[in-house]
Image (cartoon, helix red, strand yellow):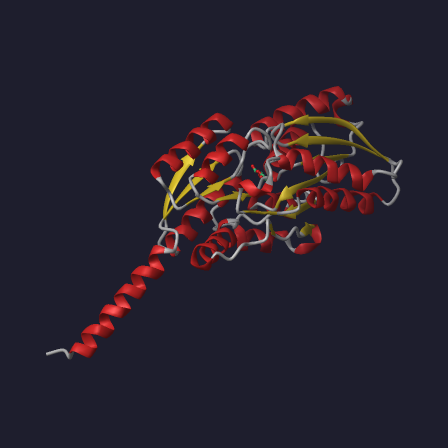
Length: 320
Ligand code: AHR
C-alpha cells in the first residue's frame, strides 16, 4: 500500500506537470504561402517536424500564393482559439487589421522568413534573414568576380510586393552602385518559380541578341536560377561561363548546377525558421520572456570553390 506522503508527492508532481503543459503552446496555426520553391517545401517540412518533436498540434493552411487566403486562415485560427500563429506573409502590406484581431484575442503571432510593414507591436517576433544583406552579398560577389570587367546584368525578381523581392533588389543595387562597369539592363519578376524564371529568361535572351549582350544573371532565388539555366542552355550558351549565375537560398539543385559548372554562387537561407520561433514562443508562454523583435538567421555565401557536390549530398535529403 502506498503511503499518504507518496500519494501527496505524486499529486503535486501531476499538478506541476499539468501546470507546465498548460503554459506551453499546444495548438499552433501555420499560414504558409504555398509551394513555389524547393526552399519553401523544406520550410514546410521542417516546421511540421519541429512541431511534432515538441508535441505541438500544428494546424497547416496552404494559401496558394494568395494574401486573401492567408487572412482567412488567420481569422479561422483566431476563431478556433489556437495558442499561437506562425505567418509567412506572401506580401509586405495589408496585414494591420487581421494582426490587430489576433492581438485583441491575445494570440501571439510570429512571422517567418518574410516581413510585413505593420507596426512591430502587432507581432511577437519575426524569424528571418537580413534580406537586404543577402542581396548585397550576391552583388558583392559579382563585383569581386568581375574585377572591373564590363558586365550587363539581368535580374529575376521574386514575387512582386514581397519583402524578399523588395529587399534583395535593394541590397544588390547598393552593392553594385559606384561600379560603372556593371549595368543592370533588365529586371522582371519570375514569381520565385522555376517555370516563370525560365520563361522570363527566355524573353531576356531574345531581347538581348540571343544572350550575347548579357554577362550575368542575378536571381532572387535558386529555383528561378535553375529555370533560367535551362533557358540559357536552350539558347546555345553556357550558363556559369557565358552568363554568370548568382542567386539566393542554397537549395540542393543549385549545388548540382554549381558542381556541373552551370551556376557560380548562392547565398544560403536556412529553411529552419520554426525551431527558433518555437523556442521563443515556449519562453514567452512559460514566464513572459519577450524575444527580440527580430531573430536573425545566417546568410552564408557558397561558390564553386566550396565543393558543391559534397554540399549537395549533405542537403539532398533534408526536405527540399
Ligand atoms: O521568403 C523566402 C523566399 O521565398 C525564398 O528565397 C524563396 O525561395 C521563397 O519562395
